[in-house]
Image (tube, rainbow, N blue to C red; front, side, top):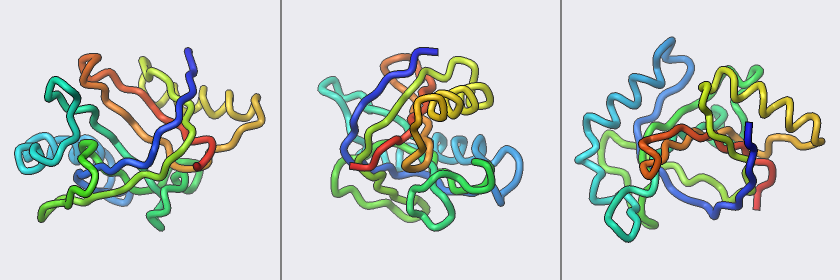
Length: 157
């Protein structure tokens, strides 16, 4: 597993929000809702120089919405399935906007899904005397055919 480091300024995501309290499959349902209504936020989405979206995020937070790690052994929390949006964008009715704090992240290509990636990175953090400084976030990269990456904040900026 190739673990890389980056710094990312705060950014906003507009998406469909749910929680682990919504039951099994809730994340897939959020993505289906976000994708099927994407046209409602398309004009708000941050794009690159070619007009393509810069990225789609499965942003996570604890229940206090302070963007701390999921609770109860990373098993309980909030999830926002959406797109990175332009600064100052406002969420339309039926959508939610989160602004993710600026952080230093470790990130990895999640080739084997979250089930294998999260424990491996948590073991790496422990071995390197690092701790999560916030919630883990999923990133779907449009430039790489929606390849899933996972971002682990290790320091708030």
